[in-house]
Length: 521
Ligand code: PLP
Image (cartoon, rainbow, N blue to C red; front, side, top):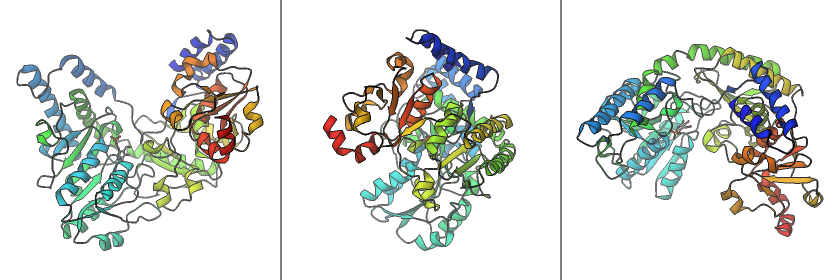
């Protein structure tokens, strides 16, 4: 709503101010009368920071500035805050506090385990076994270690994303020094039987790492009962701050320092601690049980949502498994509807969902997770992830269903997409066309836009709106056609009559129109 009020204010200073302001007033009324709402359905990407967590963090920032390594009082107070937070994290995951190390994020925790164990074992042992549907922070690190000589074996999963145990047993050999098995998948929600993986691995003396990021706060996680040697956690998935993670290392498990320098984190991860972030993580862990208590309610909402989706769109396919799945996650394919279109339309109506992992949302590659469970490239691009959280209500679900229903019935307005073939020389030179390139500098450097294109960064649209004419046909261009669609919807809602999005972005257009691109560059 604040955003609309801000837009309303900006509109008044524009050429066509009164009319644009009128549009924003209508938007404001829609919010005030509940016709339009703001609904967040992307809790697997991140969560809002809990009020209690914010209060604790604010007080640490304001009052406890001491360096935790200093011996005087303010330093010792900061050290005590860290100590307490470590206890809270340890209690929430069922570990001893000496087994918990704070890191910058779960990506760092995952990197640290893989690289540390590689250093420990290579070249005596070479093999790491992992699920092919692990988070990119595991997959990319494995790809890196492969270039250093590691042998990576991906254990196949079935159509639900569940590990195939026979295959795992066959893959383990004398050279295996680590097995990675995530507890819950971020895109489809599959929960793995990590305990069984540990039982198989320990018979062969192989340590196990589990990425518990998505499971934590959604289902009970106890590292002792799981029996793993290593586990990764992230605060921002459990209503804590971003930029802080944790790594569990079972006492006695091999491990070497991964950030060299001072003695912090028992000498394993040097660097002055982010005390406020650590305090925030600790505080967030105090509410873990409260969040897990929402699981039953969320599961019911999820069941209802799935049932209604199937009624609205009988050909939709639910990719999340029926059993052994996170209670908050629905991964759904709407055949023949591009996920970018659904997301941009939902975004316009205030509903935020994602197309998969937040870490790969800016590229247009098909989701490897969905491909591994058997979806085609096309189907992966027709798939969205809906993930709920503690604050998701029945009203939110009802609202999203209403918006989707209108969309499927053709009752919402659509933004026109211009295909690469349609953007020909005639259109390029048409005076009535205003090409709006919203890509960041770094992408423009790699693939410059044409000289008569207008460049306004996506995040500056608000500020520079007066430079976008209302009497022309705006064609928004981004790298691959996703952000441009969202921007086009945004401009449409701001009163721009003729707005289109370049469907496959400059990337797709350039491939199909190489000579045209070169001619005008
Ligand atoms: N592992 C999984 C399964 C995740 O879903 C994520 C984040 O989306 C991460 C690791 C990375 O966490 P962070 O954002 O703390 O680096």
